[in-house]
Image (cartoon, rainbow, N blue to C red; front, side, top):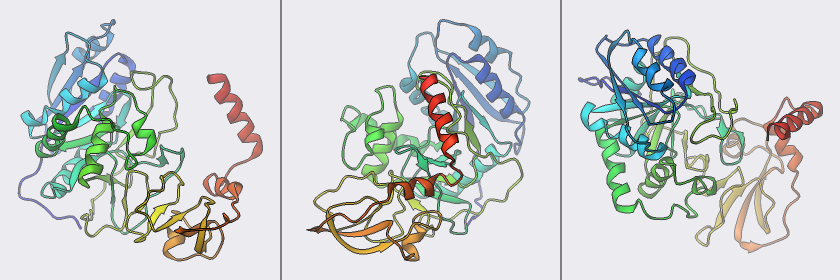
Length: 373
């Protein structure tokens, strides 16, 4: 659980901006309305070069009520990847930093949470960063995600955050050293989700995720989000949508964190809980089957011998495995023994995911998506 440290972190806030004036002002306004332990907070607004001067003018006009503002104006366009990396490098100057892209807004408690989280994990070399965002969607398969409740205000996830994240100098240095050694290596690998491997060369995040997988590292995540994402059109989004909006903390909270050793809610890069079973867990049906696997727990109908089966009733879905709920929705396979695939009810899985689904709603959503494309 949470333990006080003698010296508190004082992370700089680094805002990463490009060509979205309105979004930038919305983020800065939410930063101004947040609570801080003092009024000597360092705010850096880093603006990449674009064809419009609206964003830099907006940055220059901003008055921060809680400390000093430093504006970095890049003379040449860096692109998103280099821009984020340059902002992360500021941890060497400030000791630690919170990185916020301009399509976010923050909770009034975002800074206090980050200080507490950084201080809590600072001595654990297995933790590679702090997320301010709480995932509610498995981005690989676009299905709901919920972290198991284990009595704490956090969970651990082998997935770096890009929608509000913080690093100490040491955490960022570890990644930069890895990037210098392996940055040119192809990210595609069975240990890395295909969705991550498919990201463009503009992505710094896929390299950070590969770094974490290769070194068995994790991010600490909050159960209630301190940022939320508007996913507006920009360098890494072709159109705006609200799919990634999540509930934002809007009240005070005393954080009770678990260490990585205490936590039951620990997830790999595929959004699968690694503490549930000694056998390979693939409840989202997204992992590749490799030769080193003897047993697999999956919702997919596969041509292997079924040892046990479970129902899909409890939430989050791994609880059905933990409590061995009777049913035929989740299968424990002996992947070394071939057999006829079990009966698979895909509609059952979809209704579990979208509990308020109606056919009329689905038709309207499909039409709206097609029209938007």
